[in-house]
Image (cartoon, rainbow, N blue to C red; front, side, top):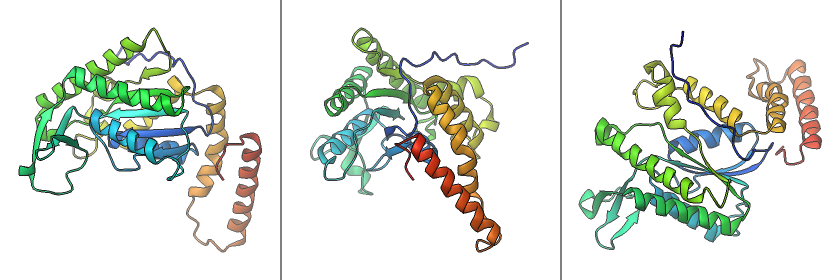
Length: 278
């Protein structure tokens, strides 16, 4: 007897390797994922100019990163995750340009509107094309944030997410015959269709809980990680746990010896995985 609907996820057409160089851009979901990858010792850059929710602002961030990559010493990513939160944008009335942050200016200076499916798809494609200029072999993972937006009303939030989902589907369909390096990961569907219980949400009933985040991480590793990356996580976990341990007496001989062994284990990992950041 089945008591939940499990979202079927096909194995990715590419695999993420241990300590890979990655870029995360988009909603606060991208931020959470980026932090988790950083914790697992992947070489990660995420939202260097702040959280971006809509496809236009995601493009603006990638344009800015690309323009300042040498000055800011941002390494070329091999995998990029773009997390889309909404199709709503704010336009500065004076210039007619979409802004990424209103900088706490009066609301009367801005006009809010919704991007169409075609407009969203165009911004996503332009983002991917720019990433390919940076690295022709880049792999891109698209996802729609499972976080709902109460201020739009729940029906409005659903319509916004539906627009993003249709846009992503259009992008992947159009790219289907020329590349296998752009995929969709269904984080939205996992939270809203598979977990769907309020125990998987924080107290605001909008943001996924820590437990939901762990489950999404598990599904993501199953879908996108190489066997080498999974093995690395297994080897890294006891070291990570030791580093996160809060000692009662950090100057005790036992703790000093523990940290000595941890450093030795990290040196062994560095030898086995040359990209491991110490």
